[in-house]
Length: 78
Image 1 (cartoon, rainbow, N blue to C red):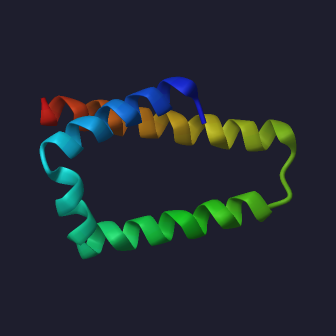
Image 2 (cartoon, rainbow, N blue to C red):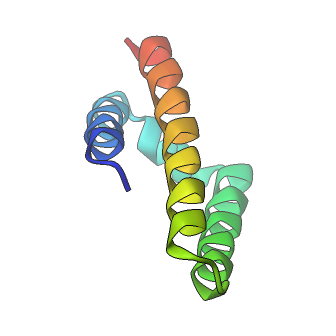
């Protein structure tokens, strides 16, 4: 995963923890289901036989989408 995405995720996580959002999310059934689904999709993706070029493209695309979501959420929580 892109270092910038990890940095943004860390910043958002810290803000969410300080605001009590993490506790709320951990109790949310939809969030828990999303986490379970994400873990399953990551496992399936790793098992796929893809060329390195294709795998990198998909990983970059996902990182871009995550970065976008993190930036939007960050602006909502600040």
